[in-house]
Image 1 (cartoon, rainbow, N blue to C red):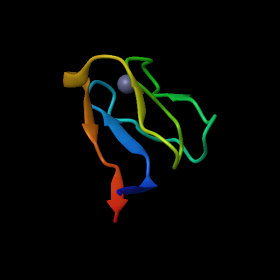
Image 2 (spheres, rainbow, N blue to C red):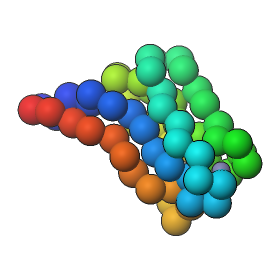
Image 3 (tube, protein in one colour):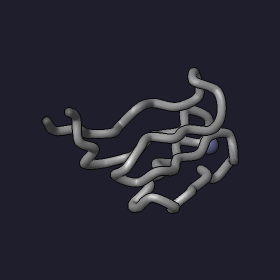
Image 4 (cartoon, protein in one colour):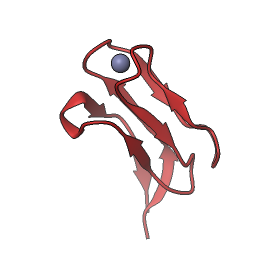
Length: 60
Ligand SMILES: [Zn+2]
């Protein structure tokens, strides 16, 4: 099973990089287009798929 090491995305609109460090660490980028949540437990995203670049890292 894949384990989440880093839960992180980059907003393509404002260029902001946001990372969810733990389960209830919900963060919006500067422009508010996208958000991350879930930390190392699960990957939750808000916003439009085309508007973020996935930067998360996994291990197995
Ligand atoms: Zn943004």
